[in-house]
Length: 180
Ligand code: ATP
Ligand code: MG
Image (cartoon, rainbow, N blue to C red; front, side, top):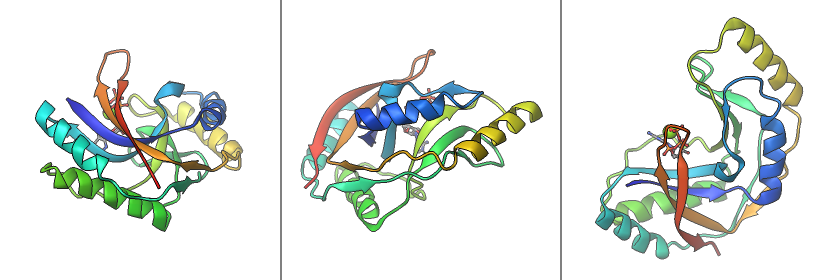
């Protein structure tokens, strides 16, 4: 099963993000209920590995974390794949990220080392935008870079199972782990 650990967007935050998504003229918006900040992509694992990850995550000890947002931007502008809201990497978020990664690794799951670039994906782009689309997108990003999405305090992290469907991924919450 395909697993990842993430922070859900609370209702009000998701509503504010949905208003930003409506401004983006191209791509496939992430459904409101799917909006999240990935802490660890665990990938395809056997059920016994999922169970071990769950047990390790039950031992997670970390404080609630304030999640703030930067202006809407394109991830990897050289090969644009998604419009995202970057999340500033605070010390508390870095500690939480490391704690989650360590828990999953303690479960015997080998996670590759990747740079942590916290963000919430808003819109997925299918293929390279045309010059016209790029221009329209640039105008929207210029206009909305100041639009605030208020910070919130994350009080739990969630282990999700992702079901990849042709219409888009469906996330199933397997378990939630309180912070603090
Ligand atoms: P789709 O791939 O159909 O667009 P999705 O990306 O929402 O759907 P998943 O691919 O299961 O669904 O991804 C779940 C989460 O894990 C997302 O936040 C995604 O960005 C992240 N993720 C997926 N693959 C990787 C990867 N190889 N490395 C890091 N993070 C990943
Ligand atoms: Mg994906």
